[in-house]
Image 1 (spheres, rainbow, N blue to C red):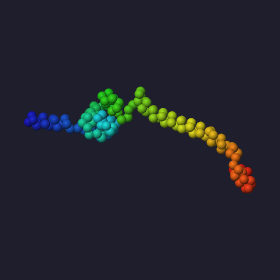
Image 2: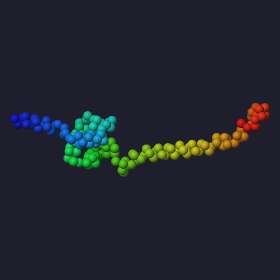
Image 3: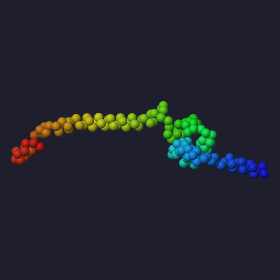
Image 4: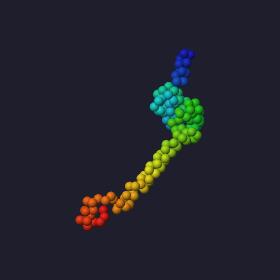
Amino acid sequence: MCLSLAFAQAAASNAPLTLPPAQEQRAVAIQKNLRCPLCDTGESIADSRSDISIKMRESVREQIADGRSDSEIYTFFSQRYGNFVLLDPPKTGRNLLLWGGPLLALAGGGAALWAFLRRRDTGPVAAAQATPDAEPYDSYLEQVRRDTGGGGA
């Protein structure tokens, strides 16, 4: 009888924690925002089958059952594994470079392109287009103009 009780308790402790539907949806949303620390592909713990991801999913469920908020759960995992574990890292401190760097590079590239195109429009090509009589002398072209009665291009 003691042996069957021990097996029943072991089976109960290995069974995943069941949550009400609203809390289960919240747990899945949090799990999708946490990265598996071992997976090289950067998949979330909701999609990963590694042992650590399974333990992290259980921990998320336990913390939700204990009444912790989403930010408290994210902070818990961030303190334990670093900001790497967050698929959406906070936009503060050094992380601002990660978020703002691509935008600054895009703005700088756009400004450089604009300056290049603007300089190109005011270069010698634009000056040649502005004065049509600045063509080099061509005797054949002059003969055609006299024969056709056209003075300009």
